[in-house]
Amino acid sequence: MATRKRKAPSVTKLFVLDTNVLMHDPTSLFRFEEHDLFLPMMTLEELDNNKKGTSEVARNARQASRFLEELISGRELDLHNGVLLDSASKGQALGRLFMQTEAITSVLPAQLPMGKADNQILGVVHHLQQMHTARQVILVSKDINMRIKARAMGLAAEDYFNDKVLEDTDLLYTGMREINQKFWECNGKDLQSWQEGGRSYWKIKGPDCAELYVNQLLYQAGDTPLSARVVNVEGKTALIESLKDYSHQKNAIWGVVARNREQNFALNLLMNPEVDFVSLLGQAGTGKTLLTLAASLAQTLESKIYTEIIMTRVTVPVGEDIGFLPGTEEEKMMPWMGALEDNLDVLNQSDAEAGDWGRAATRDLIRSRIKVKSLNFMRGRTFLKKFLIIDEAQNLTPKQMKTLITRAGPGTKVVCLGNISQIDTPYLTEGSSGLTYVVDRFKTWEHSGHITLTRGERSRLADYAAEAL
Image (cartoon, rainbow, N blue to C red; front, side, top):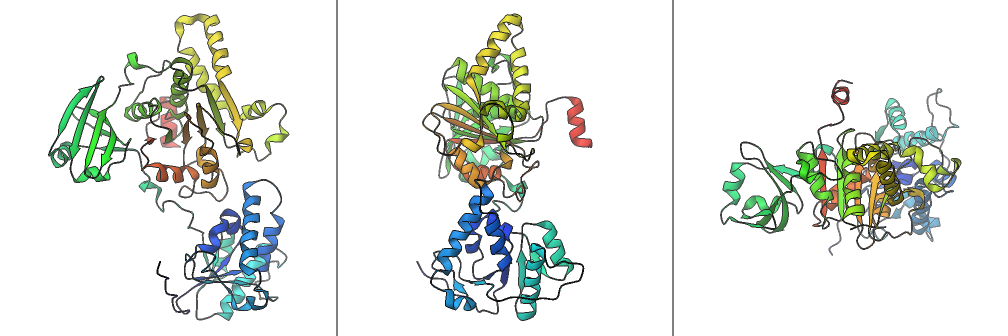
């Protein structure tokens, strides 16, 4: 591999890293390409203060410290010249890492007390700006207020963007594509069609086929509506299969029928045993949890493809550790599982003929097959032939998402549900959420499917509230 040439020093910038950047992404040390980095002593002090514990932040603080130890070990006498990042980053970063090796006393406005960590870092940025007048000195922080204070003092400040999967979430893969007559004219050159097992199949060839993904859902509106799934893509050839119509009562799943096109697409993915990973995005009330639970119950209790349903979610809003609640793991998780209770009530009421005794027996049977688990205890586990539902997945980091999905053993299906406009985790944005990450990374895999649900189906009141409030 040819080594990249280092740019002239005058072109490069000097980035001062705030502690929260390292605690958010320890590999950020190697993400600034040809530019130089500077670590204030207060950043190291805060890393030290946050290293204890088993949280994601503490793990990242320890990992950042390990990276720094490897970088500066044996170079203590030459730190003022900076440490080259080239070899440690395998050619990804060509700049130098500078540490604060001397006391810096910068004159800050009197209103900013120097005892505060943030203000000390701002003082370092101010000092470096005066020292290096010929180059840009930029503070990188995930803390909005820190960036505001820096700009108010005339200092350059930026957010850390390198963890973003997409700059604009409007570009996120929706899982479906509208086709029209022009699509058939462009790609129907050697069109082959046949029926097999109650489904219709079309083999098409043309320039648009290369842009299709396996398990992408295609729909055509108009007088002859069509809903189909891409089964296979090879170069400029694609195989398309018609979908099962779950909007018809005869195909109801545990008493639930699809109320719109996207819900029908979602049920086709959820009920397909060849699709191991499904992600459903959508606003509140679009039916994500209800559809997933109905599909999981049908495949666990009726067709017995899976032995058990496991449901988990991120316990962000409370702010207290799960251990402060009494009871077993399942009992501790129940306050966060209101959505599960609400949807089970709906699914249990669907069997009107069963009577109270029958419904009670069904409820007990369902309860015995649904296990509620905490994310805290997922590491090291393997799930065999389970239907794993990850609710509120937008609050997971990409690393946490990887930890969860890699729990899947043979015969396990993983379904991620979430709404990226409702992120409660600090420092996570729509672009850097673990849910955005998996949707983007899994879209090319032939055993995964994704749908963005857009229409709310709760009630006219909920729909109007979503629009007007």
